[in-house]
Picture (cartoon, rainbow, N blue to C red):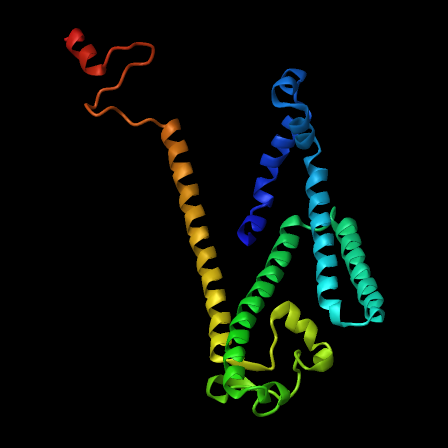
Length: 256
């Protein structure tokens, strides 16, 4: 998905052509393709953002309801207002700066942010698996230990700090935000560190492969266009004279 986002700027001309054909479709096409399909194609630039915002809104409601099952009702208004305010601010900035800011720059920044979030989720998932295995060995004492000794498996620990624990009661300040966005944990294990690096190695390798593939495709396209402009002579070394269909060898024999 990230690679597709980075290629959006290269597909603008293709999109413009499709939108123009959809808007300028004739009545003869309407009867064949159906009114519903034609309407969807005509207003696709409205339907796509509308469905996306609707899906995200439903997802936000479900998340808030699921997270807040064990919380009092007074804990909802501030979080909901902050979320609405942040979303409104980001949307306004995108709307105001959309005409002046480069689309490619925006896509690069947003794609990098998405990859950071995905890397954190992958690493945090491995960390949770290792932490669950440790709690099965140590029992409930590992949970009650908080951030101190006994809360983690020292045999698999890379580093550990006795603070900044997003899983502690209250989220330990703003570390819960870093945990949700980038997968921050105060106790790194071999599995979480290796998985984080492996994720970035796979992403970098994929982009290098796509870059090489795209360059080779561009070289082949240039070579094919050059071959069409400058056709090579035939296998027997004969070429037709301009304006005639007689090979040069045959012309020489006739002249002799």
